Length: 246
Image (cartoon, rainbow, N blue to C red):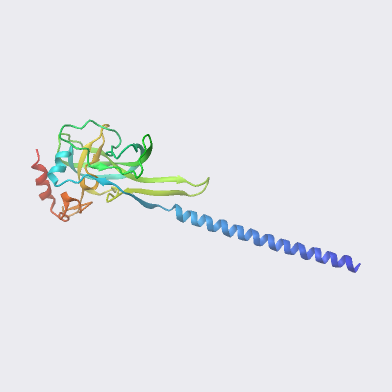
């Protein structure tokens, strides 16, 4: 009888130990899973990924104007829409967003060159491109007189799912010295026509100058040769240079 009671006590003790070990294991698994989910959420938060790029430098505003189909003052309306455009890795080539065009005589390729690090013939990659709607306040150069136009800019926000019900990994792809246009911003834009009725900016960040409330301009890339030393300049000074180009 004594041996039987002792066996029952030992069996009960072993069960309690097993239950405690099981609860500890479940707590450990829950803690690891919770920590993993929190780390995944933190990793999924939007971060800027900057892509290196080379831009054909323009010596002056006159050269940029001659290479542009339109020079306008406009305001960005709403958020942009990002899509992926296939790009060849055969060799560095001009950014075309989203369609190629036949350039008129005397115009260059627009001044933006992709720089793949290890180009192999036949390979390709998808370049994020964001389109923005611009409300045109005035046309300073060019024959078209649009009230609104669509401008494409390389880069944009991309989202990738992790697992069903999990967070999405978000990354904002931004080309070097060329932050994305923002809703409500007012700009002086040097634009080249693409083949589908949209436009892209001549020379990347060189062809975009922000305009503040005092009508002064601020180059997006103030180190660009054509715009060096012009940060804070009165807009009418720059406009007179554009107007003088025929």
